[in-house]
Image 1 (cartoon, rainbow, N blue to C red):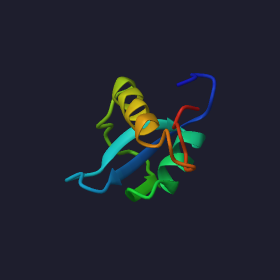
Image 2 (image 1 turned 90 degrees about the vertical axis):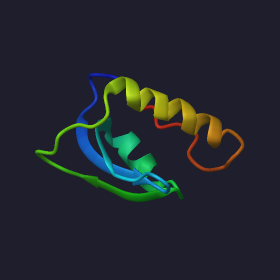
Image 3 (image 1 turned 180 degrees about the vertical axis):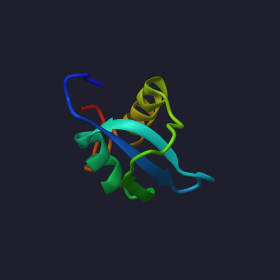
Image 4 (image 1 turned 180 degrees about the horizontal axis):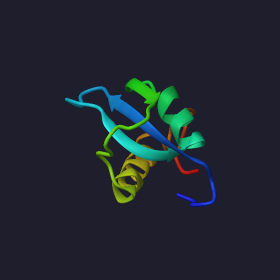
Length: 79
């Protein structure tokens, strides 16, 4: 994630996940997650404890890139 871009604290949950996660994302990443068909919850929050590190978000990016490589949908959450 580019540190010069504005950051948002985002709470999101995908289908099959038992609970939501909270991570620091760019607005572009937030928008992309919100549009994914597997997203059940995605909202900007304040004062909630982070559950994902920057490294965790990078791992999610890579997994989603692979999952959507042949799709016309969002191919990356990279901002």
